[in-house]
Length: 98
Image 1 (cartoon, one colour):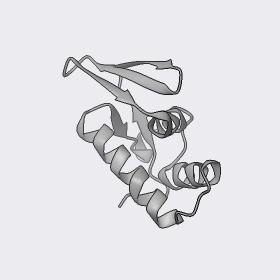
Image 2: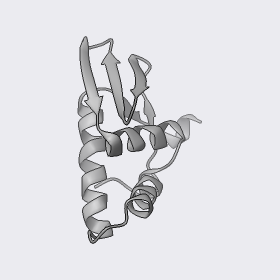
Image 3: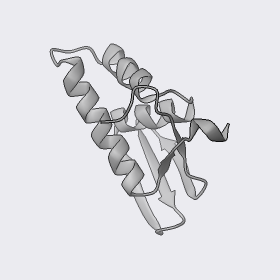
Image 4: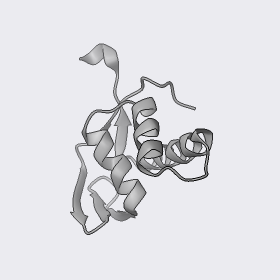
């Protein structure tokens, strides 16, 4: 699991556009297209807004309150972020480089 204060940024080689409730991403490094659903698109937007992992989890939980726990939301957000990292669409931000 990521630390609560870990931030991410969209990789320079990832081009994206919003289409209705989805985000379409093209990765120049891999030449692959990706599609994020509504919640994935919201997470992607929160990354671009410079929110940390814990803030992303809280925002998603607050915006989609249902009968699921914050721990389920945290795990789901973790999985999406991990997928985006492995596909080189986002990168972790090193706080020391600021």
